[in-house]
Length: 112
Ligand code: SF4
Ligand SMILES: [Zn+2]
Image (tube, rainbow, N blue to C red; front, side, top):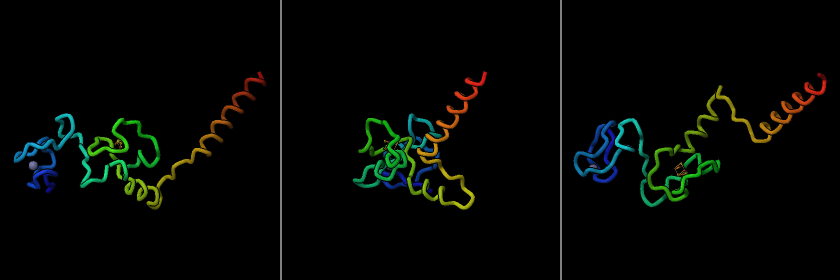
């Protein structure tokens, strides 16, 4: 059973607020929207995939103490190294793919 981050009492996984201390446990009052919280002083961003890959543009980055979009970079790394997992494309591969497609389109238009 999960525990309240503030008072430590046991809570239900779908509780929006802690019944003991009233702490907000879910985002926007919705039981399906996870509100991730930092434990201790270290901001969530330090271990977040979207900080590591520099794709987050939230104002609270890099000091977020709570966030709905947090994704633990360790899970991302574990997924990449899972046997049979599809490997992400590097930015160089993407640029080459776009260049090849554009080249083929240009060639096709010249042949008309
Ligand atoms: S998604 Fe949230 S936790 Fe992740 S880097 Fe952005 S603000 Fe930080
Ligand atoms: Zn509580």
